[in-house]
Amino acid sequence: MSQPTKSRRQRMIADWLRGSRIGSQDEIVARLSSEGVSATQATVSRDLDELGAVRIRRGGDIYYALGEQVDAGLAAARLDQLLADWVDSIAIAGNMLVLKTPPGSANLVANALDVAQIAEIIGTIAGDDTIFVALAHGVNAAGAAERLRARRSGA
Image (cartoon, rainbow, N blue to C red; front, top):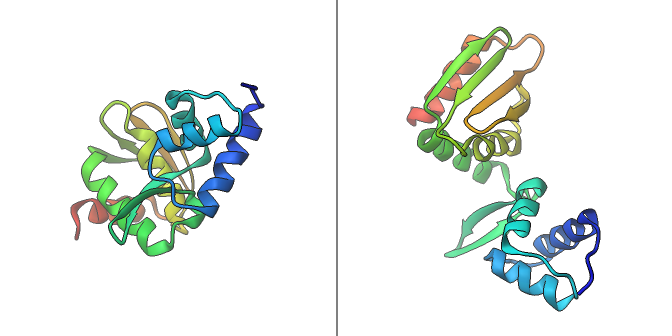
């Protein structure tokens, strides 16, 4: 089997996600194999993460979708759930917020923040258990922190 470049493999995966409902990483591995591309489940998992793909549930189906495909309502609901489930604390650091999560969870929450396209958030940087949230110019950090805390508590 050939080894295409990472960008080519990721373009293939993104095209498939845009064109059909793919429910598992194993299905992507099988599709790649049928195209003559060898990839492990771990590689596909990293590709999906880098592409910003998320698993969503609609009409009883669970499948992967690119962040661009997720409508605002679904993105907001997913963010609220992730904030409730995975964010341990939200602190203010100047004009930024610092969110703490359990180890290994920061990227999941940061991606959801990015996909939700909250106007006052211009970007995130995720480590293993810490997320830096950059706020837009002029946004009150205390107010932004309170709004995220309210979403986390379901208020």
